[in-house]
Every structure is written in C-alpha cells, then in structure tokens.
Amino acid sequence: MATQSPFSWAAQLAQQFGSSFQPPAWVVDETVNRLVLFLNHVLMSEHEAMARLARQKGQRIELVWDRMQLQLSPTPAGLLERGRFEGFDLRLTVTEESPVSLASALARGDKPKVRIEGDVQLAAEVNWLIDHVRWDAEEDLARLIGDAPAHTLAQAARQAMTALRSFVAQRPGTGLRTGSAA
Image (cartoon, rainbow, N blue to C red; front, side, top):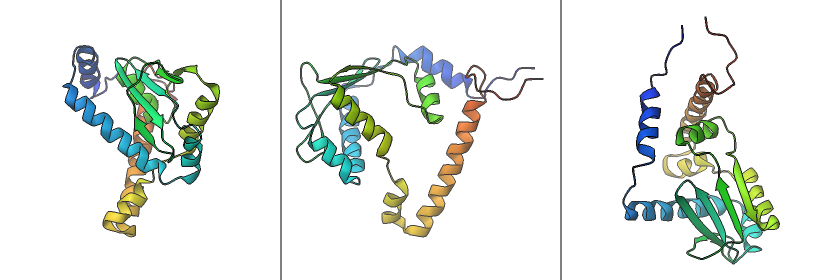
C-alpha cells in the first residue's frame, strides 16, 4: 500500500501558487540586500576566497532562477556588491523550475543543475567558492551564547539535517528509495 507524505499538500500549494504569487518589490529588494550581506559575512571568514574575488573585481555576475535575477560584482576588497547592469561576464542559470525539487536537491546536499554562459575563468572561481567556502553557523552562534551551548545546538541541527536528508532520499519519485513497498 502506498502512503502519501503528510506534506504533499505543501508541495501542491507551492506548485499552484508558485507561478502566480509575486511578493511586493520592496520585500524582494530587501531580501536580496540581506542575502548579499550574508554572503559577504561568510566570505570574510575565508581569506583565500576574498583574495580570489579581489582578482575578479569589476566582473559582472548574473544569477538567474525562474523569474528571479541577482546581479553581483566582486569588489577590490574581495567581497560582493549588488549590481544593476546591462550584460554580464558570467551568467549562471538554475535550470530546475520546481521550488520543491530544488529544495529536495539542496536538502540531499546536491548542487542544482546550472547552465553557465560567459567567462570560463570567472566560472571556475565561482565554482571554487561554492566548493570551498562554508558558513560556520556554530562559530557565529558561539559568539552569542557561548561555545558549549552553540556546540550542542549545532549537533542537534546536524542530526535534524541528516534525518531530513534520509526522509527526502526515501520519497517516492526521487529514484533513491532503497526498500520496496509492501
């Protein structure tokens, strides 16, 4: 007997309203500003990443998914600034259209499928950043609440993420199911 996920209603809702729902422009704008601040916060913890980005200063990077578009440019300091420009030196387009499928892939730890257009050297640098730069949430949390509680919370979050990945891997239709249904 096949069972349905208790969250299937959320997937259906996302598919129905995903194409028609558009948040206000100011919400999108502020969300993008916060995303750029977060990316810079993560970059500042890795000096090699900042050095690599500094060598690419002034390049125009465009990230595209569905109707969303983010334009970034590396600064001489090795950080990212939000841009508003015509054309690009590198465009990365996420080809997965479904937000649910994209979230599932990310939860499994997979990289989304991306179409790359433009400067090969810049694409290699961005790929290096994606592969090597990670946010150390535990370190940031330790600054707020101390080392021991931060370690305990981070360990619980890692266990929850492992359970989520296991759940996603066992979903029908992912091709990763290891057992057979009875």
